[in-house]
Length: 224
Image (tube, rainbow, N blue to C red):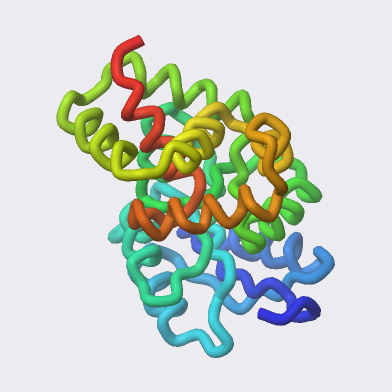
């Protein structure tokens, strides 16, 4: 996608009125183009696979008939050139947030989020920046640490052990909810170097986005 190309967005929600409202909202946002809508996860997958040019961001509901939003997110992220997925829902339990992020979602918003915030978040995830505040990161840390699954903890520790010391430090910083600028300051490196480390982490760990790296680091911490 060139610097001047609009961010191409697919809206996935089983409520036609919600889809229509989101189309109006996003088409009024700068640098955005709504390429279509889908009423469930299966239709979303078909729409993304057939889209030319490709979809950049999928705005995804969770509870839908047929293929739900979390299952659809996982399937979309398995595509050769996957779009970013931004979950937009009325449900915000810890478990749902965690399941969506583990499936590969780049962010999680509630439907009562202010319109300008939704527009800015679409741009953020399109640029590879997750929509997850430090407060939300801490909430997830607490949820995961309260009930660590030994097998998942051991897999996470094995994965992190294969990284360099510097890469592990960056992964830990992501788990603490730090931005690229904050990581650069804490580890005495440039922002460009931080971004390069994150790119390598994603490749070496086989993950989709930085939020999943943070979750892996949470898992590795195990019991508090």
